[in-house]
Amino acid sequence: MSTNSGIQDPAKLRNVCIIAHVDHGKTTLVDFLLRQAGTFKQHESMTDRVMDSMDLERERGITILAKNTSVKVGDIKINIVDTPGHADFGGEVERIMGMVDGALLLVDAAEGPLPQTRFVLRKALSQGLKVILVINKVDRPDARIDEVVNHAFDLFVELGASDVQANFPIVYACARHGWCTLNRDDVDAMISGEKKGTLQPLFDEILRDIPSPKVLEGKGNEDFQMLISNLSYSDYVGRLAIGRVLAGKVKRGQRIIRHGVDAAGNSVNENFSVTRVYTYHGLAMVEVEELGAGDIGVLAGSEKAEIGDTFVGNDGVSPLPRIVVEKPTLGMIFAVSTSPLSGKEGEAIQSRKLRDRLMREVRQNVALRFEETSQGDQFRILGRGELQFAILIEQMRRENFEFMVGKPTVLYQTSENGERLEPMERAVLDLPETAAGDVTRMFQGRKGILTKYEAGSGHGSGRVRLEFDIPTRGLLGMRSHYLTATRGEGLISTIFLGYGPHKGDIAHRTSGSLICDRLGKTIEYGLMGLEDRGIMFVGIGVDVYEGMIIGEHNKENDLNVNPCREKKLTNIRSAGAEFLVTLAGIRKMSLEQCLEWIDEDEWIEVTPQSIRLRKKILNQNLRSVKREERIK
Image (cartoon, rainbow, N blue to C red; front, top):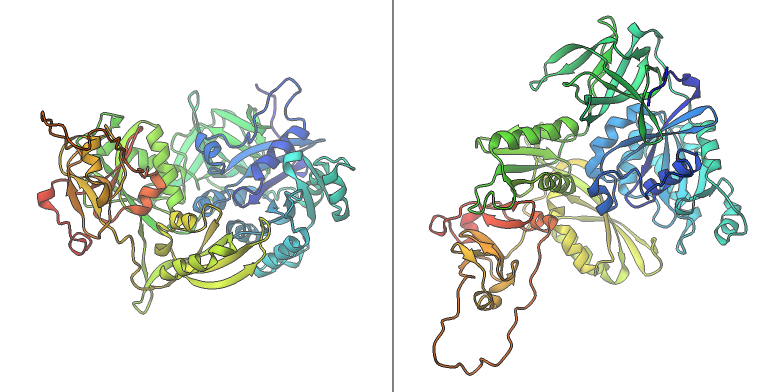
């Protein structure tokens, strides 16, 4: 689909992002904004959570990648950017803030502002964005609307909002039913159905409160200037560079210059011709002849474009400052699989292919860093959190790769006076009051300091909200223990605070591993003989090999065992032959559980079909089973 021109009068443009914590209804709100703006025709079907385009986003119910869409209200075009709500994907947030002039802060009417809301809001306020507060899910039976509004105001003041920013408009909404109101007194009537409503008040508020984009001087094609904030790819035209035009205009076929950097950080320039120009119309990218200042669009033509590059019309236009994101706090080793079962369930990749895949991810995600190691087949990725690593691993699994990953490790720093510093996080816990004592002891055992205790939080009565300042090390492996302690009813959110003094040793798991001592398949008789030794991770008929971890030992040392042992057949009938004997429960380990569980001397072997645990040294005669000797 092509039109003669994509030039939009900057005064009739609004660029806005949506800020929200995970599961506060952000993507659902975008669904209804698109529906009610007439983006979809009557005969067009539309799936729920249409902005969650990745399979992983739909499965996990979270937004991972920042995405663009647009709606038309009258003759004004509103570009909407859906941002991730999880702090692990903060790099996605930081790089799109420069594309917008305002934000919708979406807050759950029961839970109120949570840590990751705070993280993104701080970025928005520091950029000087105008913010509209949207109190969502006002129909919840445990909604505490007025209290949440007060919490939000306190948060604005705490984060240093200006007087203009702190005087924010408030919209009360129920995104899943597609209505909102500016009048607090109308909420009960709209929940009961006495009054009907739409999202029109929110559209009106965006047009009234969010300013049109600021355009730099220069209106011609030679004055063109655009900062690249996102990348995409098309099988037909190659790499697509997404960003906001800050000055001038660009047309198809025009020769422009890319200001970028190479792998060593040195400045490089590239001249290229723009082969395609796109703008957003609803969810679709529509091809146009020209793109003007203030609009968010897509350019094709440079296969070397990277996030943070500046496209300019001529040498006289200076490049813009590159996008800067907060530094990573965790590192993880990705290695070529050396398993005896390598290549049986997926593609056993060589180091070159693994390196290329990781480099591609780092280029597209500015929050990740890539480092070589002393081992030619091992590479180190630096990132924000366990979830970010888990998403990358899962994506590579689905691309049919086989590889191994190590235990996430914390990145330390050294202060000016030589003191060792480590990353600190604030954990906000929403949990049943009955579990508060156990959870407090658990977090304090991981060097956490209780900074806030608040009774009567969201999700009904009998719940409390706790806040801990805790080292990032203390949170590794904590999530599953926390869910067990709260019987699955606890919510946990974290945000990076900065670096603080090292807090001393923190105990990891105290148990050892049950390690297979031979190649073969597990047999029920062999596993039954090991049940009193610990908890099994594998069932019957599973391929195993020497050095593979098949369970958790109930003592602190490792134990080499034979799960392939068969029962010797004789012509003598045993006394217990008539009894039906079955295996006790097996703990199926998910990827996140494995990341939490493993020690420094162990790998997670990842294939498209399986996730296995193994020792780095497979031969049992080359490794110690004593914990103090194997964990240096």
